[in-house]
Image (cartoon, rainbow over all chains, first blue to last red):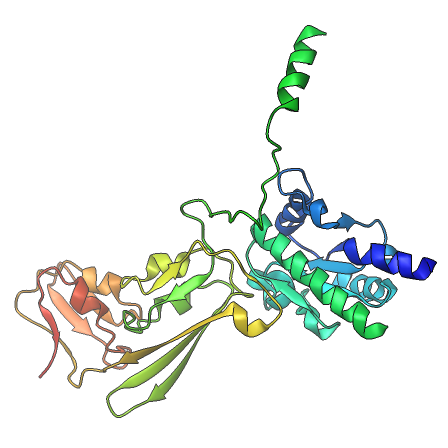
Length: 147
Length: 182
């Protein structure tokens, strides 16, 4: 019975974990801005989790530098299934202007399956809310399949 | 105590500062650079957009047709910096960065703007008529750097191997001295 209650509560409150893999901080600021009262993504139940072990949705920003690659893989492994990976901005998908650099090991698709990608440099907060909302829908479906 | 109470009371009856986003659509501010729109009918394939794109988000695929060339343009929005250089450098206004910011997608194909330009390549080579005033505008506008103009010696010359016959110089010429013919 408790398991059912936890599942029902968890479905309405997907927790976000944010990894910065060498981002310029633009996307990171916008993601945090989304959680402020102005945009208030917490209306939908989103909440920043302190550790990947508590997270349902992983938001990756930055072009995956070779220093952060190991950490990215390790962090993604710690997130319990079902997890949804969201890429924030252009960098994690293609490397953006850093493309071709010796220290960039993008895209993120090489290391994990990306469910939602939010384009923009940086994306508008409304676009991030939209992306997180679709991620929450995907998470719901994944949970249903796991049952 | 009194000033604080006044602020507290006024805040109590104020509307919340939260934007009710999904219910009320929020328009982007004027000048916002969002999803790229490409108008193939205006494009003349000068290639300036591809050159100025710093992340290399624009790809061109050329297919030869009986009438000329079909050029398929693809703008990868997951690679774009939205700097707007391609829009600024496009003389024909064939590229526009619209105010559409809804760019969250599960499928990569939704984040690609594509379009085809049907180009009719002129048969003749570029020539300069007698009206030329050696203003060097054509040389400055040429995306390939094929034209050289010497103002003091009054010499106009074109490198036919570099020239792609895009016609940027023809429309830039204030004297209408340039043409494809002969």
